[in-house]
Image (cartoon, rainbow, N blue to C red):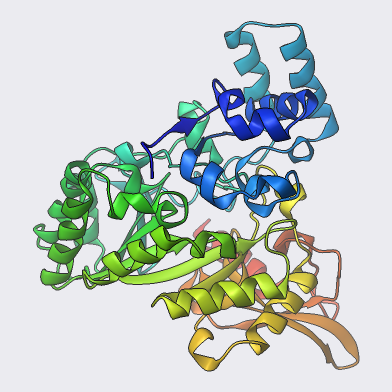
Length: 438
């Protein structure tokens, strides 16, 4: 592979394939949408993952290049007119920021409910929603090798500091972990922690290994690097240093789980990614895989079946099928809950038991991770059966509940309780807890 190249709004028109396969109008659409939602791609994605003969319908193209329909017609018109009038960068950013604030930049109470405090200090680079797991956003890992157009973390990349999660030091994190013995897992997230050099990554991980945190059992790294730049573990100048750090985590007695995001089978077919997977597994790290289901990208049982089979073939563990979160370009990617369940069921039925470690389809909503178990008829009423995989209240986990059947619903907020109930059980319990606290 030649030298790493990155393309953004400032230079994407220099990509030879863009000049060959995209019209001037299509290039302008990318500029419009990319002025609101983040855009970044690299030469590996452009040259090895996108089938340019199938553009604009190629899944990997849609996954990385902004599409006109990702903005509402009104929002698209505002930005398009500003670009045609050649407004200055400051004015354009003001217009874009106003639009961004209307796109639910921090869904599921991330900013209001998940950010903890210690000794009166708000930990702006930590989220603690579920008892056992703390999310950590290392400051130097808040970008990616390429941006997914569906990404619910898009506010991390658009230059609005008030929307960004990040923290530079791990001292306060270690202190917080010691005061919360229920936490067993720290999940490094972003952005992408694997954008960092081995030296930077070590600065964040070593304090956890040597911080005398007896409750810490698992370190997870959420990353898209295997899909978008597997050379991070093969030929980058510090690739061996990264792998050595992974071995040190294992040797310390802490389990390292590499949470790899693969959104389409194309990402698993290249020799580079297969070699990189083998390198990571040789360190003793475990690789678990996850992705949302997205219209026009992987909304078919065949795509998921192939992904799970390829993942298991190369030693990975299928983990989650998510639903596109209620933020950013959700309307463009959304697959109705019932349709997502049908795809999941068909794919699940088509693979052997060794692939059936995967859970889904699930929504990471405000109350927790809610899994769609499927439609059913109960007491003469057609319903959707759901349950919590994770809950803001641990007592909700694995607890089934029922919603009225709605084949158009795309998110938890679209559903209504079944059997004439005024609200779901978790809403009632939340209201009761709020009343008691007052």
